[in-house]
Image (tube, rainbow, N blue to C red; front, side):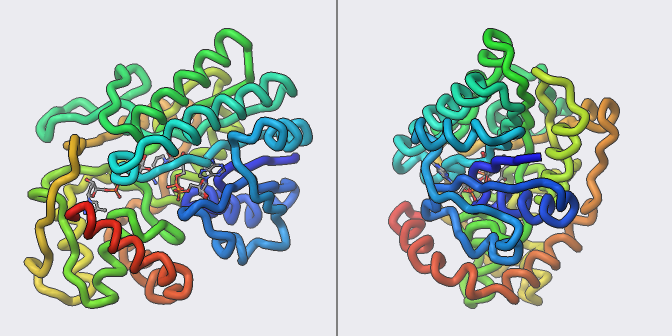
Length: 331
Ligand code: NAD
Ligand code: TDX
């Protein structure tokens, strides 16, 4: 099978390529990645022999058409992915998440290639802290930020291309991922690398916002399950019942580092900050038989801290510029 992975040099995409190279050696893997600030060729170094990396943009119609025409399956991870960046400058989000997805859809339509679309639970907006409801694939779309609005738009393009043009597509909407190779701009790696550097963690607002954490490996086994067994045209929500508020996560990290539970700073909150995400993944579990394996969040955090300690050369080059950007934004 010839597989095209967009965004395969990013956090989740590179972990997906690692998993695929390890467990499916018969798959020929091509990665299409623009190597933006968030993409890093060295994330693919351990599997470099099994992967062809093409540096290019998913909005480049000619390049996308050529790569899709020689593929049997496209898994589309490439995106502008950070909410804070989307508040500072929404344009790259419109360009990559909307125009980029459109460009891929036109190519898979033309060449009749199977397509899996990676999306987020943020398309559903947010929940109250005490709401017993969780997101399902029937929850109405209600995105809050330019990031989540462009992801929602990209999902709707996929649904329209499946219904009107009959493309062979599936969609997954996953909750917050953590694990190795995540950019230091994101919450957990930012605090881990702050703690390594002796800087106090930074909590937006009161820290009561809840995220539904899942280990990146569990996200990616779910993606393969949907590709193998999912019904075409369907949307599957991926989650591992990992709800934690941000204060709990910061205090878990402080404990791993042997620091006092109040050794952090409150900083300016994010504009439009979603309060709570929670995923109901019953459809994926009962219909397709998927289960998460990394269900011990504390153990997963300890492994992730160990990874950042052992791989300083990977994250160090991005750290100072990331913190400078946060300091300008008051975070
Ligand atoms: P990331 O920012 O770490 O990686 C994105 C990758 O896409 C980078 O390698 C970047 O170079 C590449 N890219 C960006 N613009 C491109 C373009 N125009 N052309 C080609 N490549 C381009 O993101 P991530 O956290 O790995 O997220 C991957 C996907 O998963 C995204 O679609 C995101 O919306 C989705 N998602 C992420 C999470 C999460 O918690 N991180 C949760 C649910 C869904
Ligand atoms: O320094 C921080 N302090 C803090 O309290 C940072 C960077 C974040 N936060 C808070 C904001 C959020 O409530 O932590 C939570 C997680 O923040 P992010 O890592 O920025 O993730 P989030 O905005 O929840 O979005 C993530 O999950 C869904 C990914 O970045 C998206 O790509 C994905 O779709």
